Length: 319
DNA sequence: TGTCGCCACGACTCAAGTAG
DNA sequence: CTACTTGAGTCGTGGCGACA
Image (cartoon, rainbow, N blue to C red; front, top):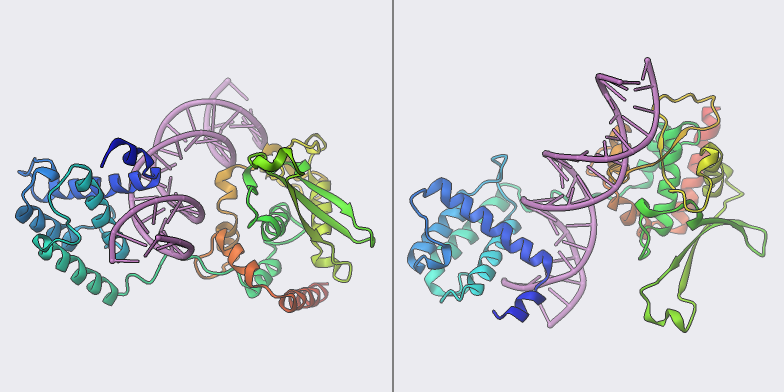
């Protein structure tokens, strides 16, 4: 591979290649300590045996088995590395590497049989039922700081999260505007200005996204959530450039007007919003922020209305 | 099927804010 | 002030899925 082609390789691909290489080298060091050659200097018969052994016996750091896909990725990564060093064979195709190819196939079958390869890290949808439970358990609520923060975060993420250029961690207070439409309905508007768009000079390259108020269901109205959040923010954090999400005051006085610090909520917290609220709410399943995107894409209008009705019932029961 | 872009997430370090 | 919490920044690992 020439320099130009090498540079054009994606950064992530390079990283992936290096990961494969590191894991394979570590494996060699631990299992065949006398082997010190660069892997592209090892003759094919020997390398084939090492690879077969790697696919069969390699384990993750914690001792558990790899996912079948990871092993295949490693094979590809090592292939890229060997190609870079003009190795004479293809470990994925050539018959000289039949043994390791078979070992990989066999291992993948074995792992699948053991129940691996079922996408264990795939995040699960945040369902309507989940949301209801979260509301019931105060994790989506206007009546406590954490619930309120979760609520506005969820409203925003559902409405704007899928848009290019929307990032929770950089969202400013002034990025979301409270407006009233011509028909008198209130709404929240997020405007995306694409500064990278080369056409921006010629035309107005902005896109608007909105969340509309639901006056028929005030208890679950996202605009009301926003207004409540605005009230609970310290006065000093109401300027345009202030971070949208603020950290919660450690000692919470529910009776106090302001519930939040003058400090931005960090990315560590933002990245785990769904995970944290689902854990605290005892919601089963693997839930991540991505779960929200999965649910909003499939949430029909009928389902939304149903949610509103159920939540209203809940509220009345609670009173 | 292999390549590659993207994402989630944990681990780690160091800096800064907050309570007492 | 100190102890503690939480932030930002960064890296490594590994999974998912679009695409050719």
